[in-house]
Length: 234
Ligand code: SF4
Ligand code: SF4
Image (cartoon, rainbow, N blue to C red; front, top):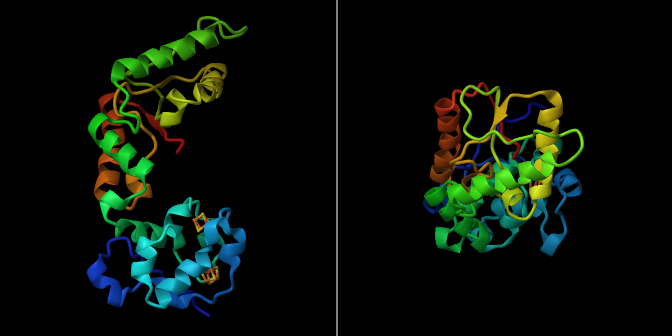
């Protein structure tokens, strides 16, 4: 049997509901996706159900449902699907069809903040740099890391790394793990002072335009700082 070429629904709009030409019709209902999905069962969520709902013409119900927002978009289902159905793309496509004001609160607010400020927290640049320097000072007090400092906006570094907003909010301890590895490896690295957000909620909410803005800013930072490699750990 030849595996059919999957078709993404990323750029569809509600007018195309009646003729939704995605690959769900190739589904065998084997449930391999359901059994591998890490969030199967949460509030009744199951990727196979999503695919079946599309096949049954229940797209409007899906767009209004909480289910597509439970998916983490990890891609495990797609990896095991014998029919190569692009389930994460389908989830994104469904999310893209929801009115932007109906996007779940934290994602909607975070994305709006990111588009305005360059990060999902709306953290001003001076506060961001202050937090980085505080964490660096704590590291420098540990044995073996004397003299450690954080490198912000350095030109020509080997690695430019983005930051997940939680690392400068509730999980600053996690920053230390990365930085200690860089230090031990003698790595030449830097963090951009602006547009440092590595979490692209444009991608997760199905907002292609916002996704491009966020990704474009990272590319601009790479060019501005003449960095050689990008570490984008999201
Ligand atoms: S793994 Fe693929 S073919 Fe099997 S139920 Fe899921 S979507 Fe359908
Ligand atoms: S991409 Fe979504 S549906 Fe697929 S396995 Fe991951 S969480 Fe489950």
